[in-house]
Image 1 (cartoon, rainbow, N blue to C red):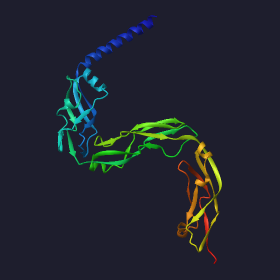
Image 2 (image 1 turned 180 degrees about the horizontal axis):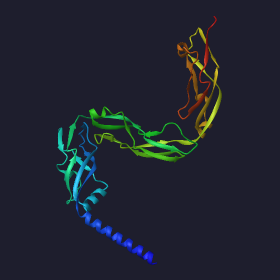
Image 3 (image 1 turned 45 degrees about the vertical axis):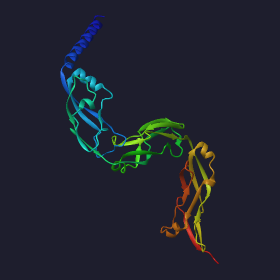
Length: 308
C-alpha cells in the first residue's frame, strides 16, 4: 500500500509540475509559421489567369496560449476578396492582413510568404468538359463491375479565363477508396478545382453509379468467323473456320447472353495486306461483357479465285 501511495503522490506531483511548466511557458512570447490555404473570392464577371499560390505562409507572434488556439483553429485561411479589383495588380500579402486572416487581437503577423501576389485578369469564357472518375472501388472476391460506371452528368460546365479553360479537358472527382463492395451503389462526389479558384465548376457535385454482380464465365464453341467485303471473283477459306470464346460478366447477364449480339469477322483488306500468313479477327460483344479468351488467337487463310 505504501508503494502504491508513493507512486500516486509522485504522479500527482509530476502532473502538477508539468501544468506549472506549461502555464509559465505558454505565457511567454513565441513566433510560429503556418501555411494557410488561399481562398479567392471573384465577382460573377471576373476571371483569373496566370499562376496563383495555393497557400500563403504566415508567421505569427504572440503568447503561447494564443498561438496554441490559433494552431488548433480548423478553418484558418487566407481570404482574398477580388470583387472590387478591376485591373491587373500586384498585391502586398502583408497589407490588410487582419481583414484577410481571422487573427486574435493579441496576435501579430510578422511576415508573409510570398510577400506579393500577382493578380491577372482575362476574358471570361465557358465550355463543357468530361468528368474524370477518381473513385477506387475495391470489390469482394468473386464480384465484377459490369460495364462502365454511369456518371450523371458526365459533362459539366466550367467558366473562367479563356487562357485557363483552354488548357482543361476534364475535371476530376475527389479521390475516394470504397472497399469490400458486393452490390450496386450510387455515390455523390465533389469535383476538384485543380486551378486553385481560377474556374467555376457547374455543378460542383456529380452522381456515380456502379453496377456490380457476382461474376460468371461461359465458354461458347462453334463461333463462325466471317470475312467481309470479299471481291466477287475471290473466295476466302479460314483455317479453322470457327472459334471458341470465353466470356465474363455478371451471373444474370451471362444467363441472358444472346449469341446473335456477338459479331466476329475479318475485313478482306486485312487479309489482302497481310504479310505473315495469319490474321486476327475482330470480335465485338455487348458493352457489359468481357472477352477473356479466343481460341485460336490467329487464323490462317487461303484465297482462291472463283471458277466461272
